[in-house]
Amino acid sequence: MSNWTSKQRHVAFASFASWTLDAFDFFILVFVLSDLAANFHTTITEVSVAIMLTLAVRPIGALIFGRLAEKYGRRPILMSNIVLFSLFELLSAWSPTLTAFMIFRVMYGIAMGGVWGVASALAMESIPDRSRGFMSGIFQAGYPAGYLLASIIFGLFYLTVGWKGMFLIGALPIVLLPYIYYKVPESPVWLEAKAHHQSGALLSTIVSHWKVCLFMVGLMTCFNFFSHGTQDLYPTFLKVQHHMSPHTVSIIAICYNIAAILGGILFGTLSEKIGRKKAIMSAALLALPVIPLWAFSSGSWSIGIGSFLMQFMVQGAWGVVPTYLNELVPANVRAVLPSFVYQTGNLLASVNATLQSHIAAAHGGNYGVAMAMVAGTMAILIAGFVAFGHETRGVNMSAGAEQSV
Image 1: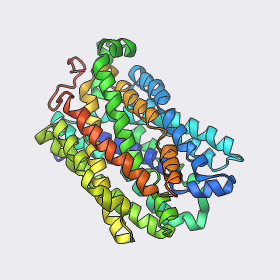
Image 2: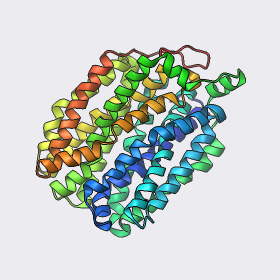
Image 3: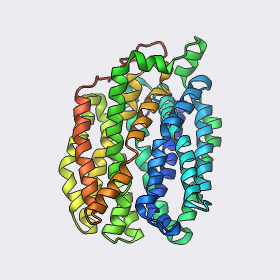
Image 4: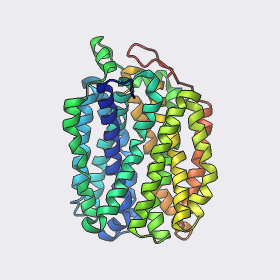
């Protein structure tokens, strides 16, 4: 980053922070599933539908905000996204019924759906080409960084503020707006495209390149099962199955999210040397030998080490995704198409939490079995998908360049 301009550093920080705070708001929910179930007099499985709904509607947000970002620019639409997902996070705290809570989570999911594509396009189009792998790892590390922040906030404030207070704290992302407004410039690639009156037709792009688009959707479905299958019910696994205190759950979550950040940065950076495909496949396959320690060990130390190693590998593979998807598509649909396939993968994987809850219930409340089944299957599928994909390291991402999509 020493050779980056100050504007490029501001873009990098704003993109990372946007995704971090978005993920922070999402992961607050996974820490309070049991509290919500008690408050609304229902089961954890029923409440976990909120996770499914949030993920399921994210493709809608990707389409709406992605197309707006292609028309009006990355920067103003990113700011709009932040306002909206902060607002609906805040409203979640005042849900009078479970139905109202579900509605607010649907609206939050739509707002959340636009952030990844808009922020990643802004970042990848603004930083030097030779730094894309590193920036990809940094940007995607915002997701576990948000989980880490939620873990810290949960450990520090949950016993004082309760589940409602956790959602009120979720309005924090609004503080990013002045920074983005005053410090972050618009994407130079978008400005170039606008100057030349270039625009992209999403439907025609998908039709013309349907094989690669289908490949990306399949890959991102596996990736979303991989991440959500190892994260969303893990606090519940620790609290309900291992009867750990909120403090212990918070410490373990903090540790495995630090690992996730490190893994994303390492494999993202490594992808500049060995290629995107090898970096993703290596991280995914290295998750397999960690599963027994992560899902079936006992004691806080063993579980903590297992979760550290698992998230290092899971988010290591994810660290390559932002640059990989952005490199696969043309500049004039970059704010919408990568996000759309990513969020479509989220839609197809949105059943994960409910599916794992049912599997756990069928095995006597054993969440470890449910998580191991999903993690192992998806690690193998990701490696298989990527093996047949294009290598994109070093492609030209300027507005007039042809991409390999």
